[in-house]
Length: 307
Image (tube, rainbow, N blue to C red):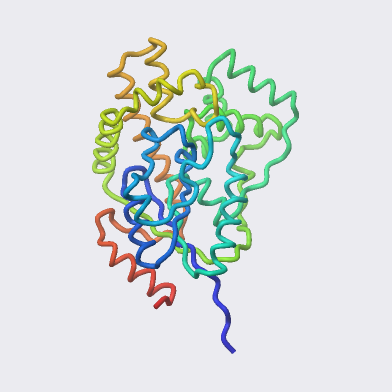
């Protein structure tokens, strides 16, 4: 008696600017399937240049989901994405046996593949006190508190994202335990199997590619894009590298050259945190960034007994 197989979700991960989009498109074409984007920066229609949204040619090369489908004014959480992505996959897998997911947002990838962790409810008094600490003392004091009380989480998270820092500090103050204690060791049962493919390269090459990408973004109009968004700078969606630095430039806190330098530096730091996050996932099969796609395709077929 044959056992029916679960459909397969191919998950392409790796640091920013490594070439994930190009590989995902080749995989989608090879398996005649569609792409789920798990890049949380690319969800928002107002943020195009600064998030390296796939080009119109790339979007035409394979069907994509979750690209610029939300406005920065809409509240959209990782839990929302998990729910919506699973609904899309459940419907898609009724007619197809393979799908591709791609992105550098490790939390969003893990939410779909493994399920979200469960966190305790935070009293409103603590929530207000953390917000007050941020508004009155800035991000640095909360960063220092988080680093002292949960160095494990601090090392791998985006410490420049106020919302994430405040959330972690809230949990720590409410429970007296490190935020990382609440990350589950068990994975949710899914209706599909997952095959992780990771792209990697020497750190120097990754940094070189990041610096070049930022220069191209500036040439393509990132400053003008950020200028339009500056009045809404407090929105959660805009607490991201490439925009925060330019907002400081617009407010005469730094000059334009320094803003660009900081975008490059902070993007490099983001790539380092991505590496820290993905290296803990032993299920990832790693390939050099310039590996021919046909080699990776054959690896996937052989490992998953696909024709």
